[in-house]
Each structure stands twice: as C-alpha cells, then as structure tokens.
Amino acid sequence: MRNIDSTQRNEQLACFATAPADEAVRTLLALCSSPQWAHAVVAGRPYADVAALADASDAVFGTLAPAELDAALAGHPRIGDRVSGADTAARLSRSEQSAMQSADAEVAAQIVQGNLAYEQRFDRVFLIRAAGRTPREILDELQRRLGNDDDTESAEVREQLRQITRLRLEGAFNR
Image (cartoon, rainbow, N blue to C red; front, side, top):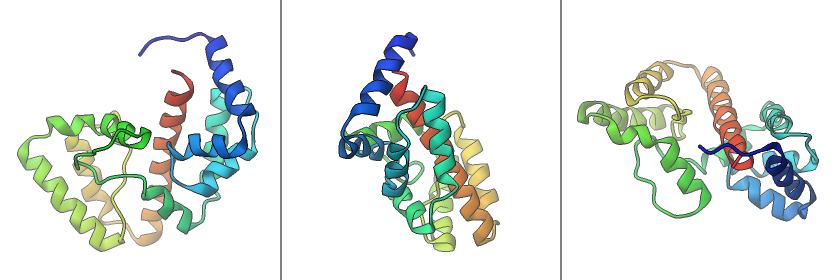
C-alpha cells in the first residue's frame, strides 16, 4: 500500500465534508449498505481526520436497529463465494476474502457446510472480518459461533460489521 501525505487525506475528507449529502451517502453505502448508518455518518460531517470518521462510524454501529443490521448484511456475500461485479462493494469483498483462494479443499468444503448450517440456525449470512484471517481461522470462528444464542450472535454480527466497515473507511480515505 502506498503512503500518502496528510494533505491528500485532508483533501479527501474536505471533499467528503462538502459533497452534497446524497452523494456522500452513496459514497458510504458502497462501504456499508445500511442507509441508517450512512445517513448518521454523513450527518456528523465534517471530520477532523480519518480516525474521527472511523470513530463516528463505530459509534453509529451501537445504535443500529436489527433491520439496519440486516440491510448491512445484504451487502456481503457468503464467505468463500466467488464474488462477481466491478462495483466497490464487490471489489472490497474479493479483496477481503482473498485468503479463501488458498483454502484447501477440506476446509473450503467445511466452510460451505458451515455457511448452510449458520443460515439455517440464524436466518442470515455468516459474516466475519475475513481480512487478516486464514481460511482455518474463519472456519474455527464459524464453528464456534454456531453455538451462540441469538443475542450473543447478534452482538458478534454487529461487531464484525463494525470492524469491516472501519477497515473499509480507513482504506477509502487513506488511498
């Protein structure tokens, strides 16, 4: 990843701060598909720096209603699925799940089975911050989380969404 100076970051934040609200919301929806989250983060503009933007995003995740978590999940494919498309969300998902390309056949098959069991158990796609994790770590987390009760798992989903979105914000505004 190339280094950029603080002037470039400040210019990115300045553009975001002054963009029309609907444009700024569209920018954020490419990173997290929850309209409530995007509108709340846009409403908090301007931000002093990328860390302040990411911190504001983190704070909003604590307030999201279950329906908004579902909206955010709609923007994420299953772990291990081949993601097509050229839009920002598709590119991000491919990058975040790139370690899955190296999964051995047994682990990949167990993740497919785990995804199905998770969806039957929780009625939503299994979501995990895949960036920085090996396929084995993802499988281990999937298997562990299958034992969660509904409330515990909802909290885990919220936290995983927060982590993914924070990484995406930092990447988008630090390029």
